[in-house]
Length: 217
Ligand code: ADP
Ligand code: NI
Image (cartoon, rainbow, N blue to C red; front, side, top):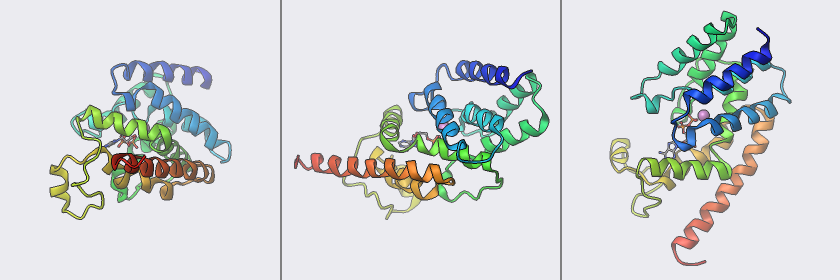
């Protein structure tokens, strides 16, 4: 099977898998990550097939939507890649990417390292920040029925983690828990550069948001 055919088939497979996905995790998220990954890969020496497959399959069964079960995504991806007769080494590398890409509060020690994972992880992180990142955060917050912002719920996590979890933190808090931290977690030079622009855009958004909240603008 030619590698072009494999990528086309993977695109069809992922589109089908994500037909009913929530707006922040739909096919268009995958398409943006795929494009980001190709852009970043231009500046790196890497196995492009692994990068493409990793980007396309990284959210094929997100654990958030499978009762926290993190084994579903890798299993679904493996079954598909085996049906496409992809070499075992490539399958294993793609599975390692899927299993290690997630942010997990930032304290997650990556067990697997490769240039291809660096690239796909940066590509995924770029889609969580900037204008798209803002849109995805509020979309996810709406999906979870969260409030936009609540000045009584501090963004600095001064309460205990358990207490905080119970408060159903507003979407604005997610910026401080994750989105504003991502620019310092990028792996590649291209990723870092794009992340800085998107980070600055979010900082601007937040100051405008608070000014409007207070009726100043
Ligand atoms: P990743 O795609 O890196 O695994 P997630 O699946 O955690 O990231 O998140 C997917 C999207 O949903 C991201 O844009 C993220 O910012 C957003 N999101 C996740 N958790 C929250 C939350 N508690 N509030 C708002 N947005 C969230
Ligand atoms: Ni993703």
